[in-house]
Image (cartoon, rainbow, N blue to C red):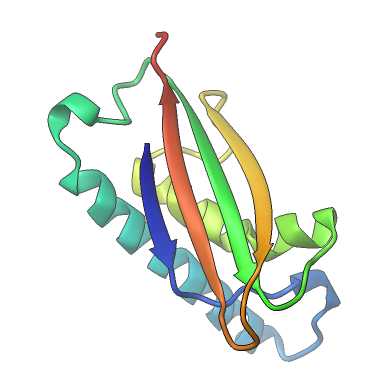
Length: 125
């Protein structure tokens, strides 16, 4: 299993109001940060632990850390751009049938925001 901590803040996007350019910039930054850090972690894995051999099913758990909990639909929306960035790092579409996405959240301190990314494979081809 591979774990990466992304020190980024996620918001419940459907509940936010604001200028479209600000929302687009936030989405771009979340996706780019996720892609860069996850790609670096995948590259650092020894070849024997490679996640992307093309045959395995991959489970990705995204855990949001923040001072307040979100309901399930807002949690998925808040992690949308992180999900896209993780899929980009693996060179897959986020709707690929080999990928299984799980969402979770944990309460953190008043000013602590992050996303934990855990990637695990099913050893069966």
